[in-house]
Length: 417
Image (cartoon, rainbow, N blue to C red):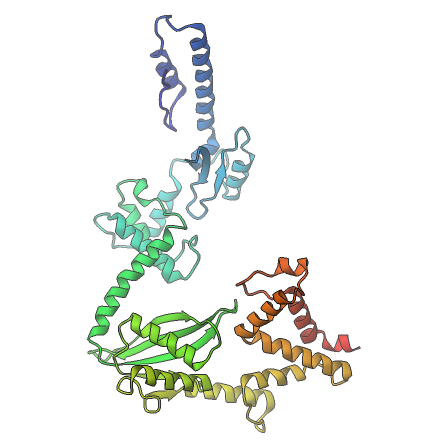
């Protein structure tokens, strides 16, 4: 015996009529009759539940046999498992949105949002294309440099324009957070092909290169290309943020730069290079000449030191030590001097100075920080508490490291006393 399929908008009368058609003029035996009554009761309860005012504000979906309720508010989309008898969680969530039993559902969330956003936009596409909609969504997330759940950006207007002319809501259902990265990569590949074609007609480039470590202690080499087009307009585009592994030697950075150039088919086009004045950058320039040839890059003629970097370092020394400041051999010397001024000069102070200098030196380099962590593992000096604080590949040091660093930096005088 098959039960009638019910829509979310089904009524009690429609269920009753459907059940009446299932009668077989008394031929049903007692067991079948009991089953029918049980099913009818279940359907009636389900229908009453569907008519509860709460559920009109949620979308439902089945996942592996479990029903989920998703808030229809576009800026929320919070998902709940089937409450199975209690609606307190669903109700409390709606209250956060200012929704109660007296709230009107005459105008759904999406319509109100679309009307408001589209009011100031005269250009609306005349036809809907599902792939174009996904592309625009990917552009929105990419240009915002925000998490995939963020939904406010100028490109979001274009997404709404497409949604406004969609033939059905199914066509504008937002993809999952695992699908969005795939869309972003696909859109990026499309732009990548166009840029490669653009580069074919450009005879030479100027590159700016710099090594950079994120706040999570992940080192990158950034490479930006610059050129002037036929209309004498200056153009710039980031070619890559190449992850650096191992020491920041000139050889490693040259290898990373060549990988980026080959990716864009630019390894045979002459170029100039602007970088800071660190010794590893000079070594990198020499390696580029050896690998690419002097016809593409000459380490003496084509390398341009960054004067802004020199002025910045000089200004920092002047602001800190005055016009009589001596030149520092390296950035680490600057850090050492700053640490000396923060802690007393007694015997305990000297010990703390050495300790803090070591910590600053380790923190200043992702490579030293990795060796420090590895030494903790190898010598089994990390107890369970520190293991819980430490995760391979993350920015956090073992807890001891943070404690020692903070105490020597901010509590030096108190510790000495």
